[in-house]
Image 1 (cartoon, rainbow, N blue to C red):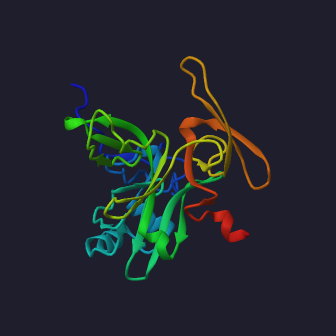
Image 2 (image 1 turned 90 degrees about the horizontal axis):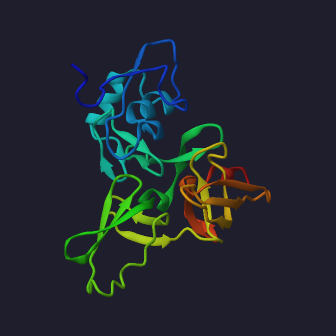
Length: 253
């Protein structure tokens, strides 16, 4: 009889390449619990605490930190070491007043970027779909699995419908209140979240509509005036004029 349900275990060799683990020292690694992010686009909290930040030496020590409520993800206490964190999630440690945002980086996949001040109070979410629900209200489906319901006063003239798919919301955590919005169009700043140019960011200078089933091609221009081309699925708007979040390049400049 075949397997029923999702897999519960994960070997180290087929684990995502950007995970900072020894592939052959041990056989197994923690498998992220199904949730807001895909397996190949997330990090389990255990790896964040033990392997990346090195706040614990063993899984037992990491579990102790979590069960004591010392780790916040997007403003909420998380106690499971297999909880998955992904793109733009904010991980905070109240005892040390440290916080990190998960962002893409060139040649490294997803990394933790240290943030301070007001940056700890919000995250960015991309709109991947919109649906009409009962009563004519609108529901925004975001890239991290959450949904935001927009109350519509008049379904025949939904003036509240100002949001487009592929656009980005700036929301407070943990309340998920919308603070700002930018749509994917020429002139906005965006970061590339996949492909060979992952982690590079710049201004969107051209959007080429595709024919048939092919994805539209987006052209970005970075600070060095280099032009980058990628498909629309890999483009994540991060602001207009100035990015809403700090990027690793900002620290070097």
